Image (cartoon, rainbow, N blue to C red):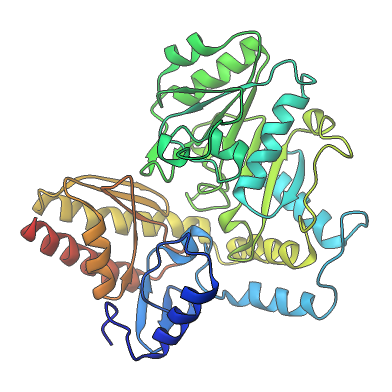
Length: 404
């Protein structure tokens, strides 16, 4: 099958249905995926793909990890959903597991990263009863698509046609502590930052930057919020990205890989701050539902039972070795950034044709910021799959560069 021309295939029928009934707000590749296992997926025509970007980073444990599948199958036969006016055992256990692996505290559960960030935005404002409503964020960051979160995202392309944006957000260059100091005033309540920029190109915070933000927040009585929607839940080889930097936040936001592919999000905060998110001030009807909670618990247990945090370190070394070798022999590769299973290959050429060429080679990757090939592989990816995928990626980059 040619992935560039699905006409006359089973995929064409699906594409025609989408054209008639689905809002066209996504750019989709002409591929209909029907099954997945580990780091492999299959399309409607039976073609197999190696997935280096499973579930847009949500499938941290690969496609259909057996412990998560079993937990969800068991739960769906018992209780699918109840609202948060009732207690459920699984939600409380899930919160305990997250608390013990972070800084100790309490969890608010929702369904996505943007919802988690909306909860954090509210918490910053509620902590001062609205008197300190301003929040500083950073250029290159990404925090979601709802109005509060998209305003927090300091990238003008995401604001086009949506103005006026929500009041109170101020933007600083990433890594610039002096700029942050200049923005802080008596109405500034918090700082929201990704410890590792994800959509911004897989860029870790520069040395001393997060420490400096912690100092500013402590001196001015502000909250430090870490958006760990991409970097959390073990992806970097630590449970949370902030643990690489030795800087403790007041709030963490989580989603994507939190439930190993099942929709789920969370905001974690201290017991002292949690009291400000009092009843009636925020909610998520499906937040912490039994299916998500069981999936989240199973994901944590699988990571620990199979020693996957240590596996991330070994897999990262393997990616680093192969991608550095590519950089050394290909002028089109400007930089390689590997932080666990967050990987950015920065190019001197347009990345979109590389993604297309990878698809032709049945390798699924992503391009962000125009020239960064972003990989978010499963943390349990097999060494043979790393070697196979890196070879396909190298060929795609070399072939594209030769035509540029």
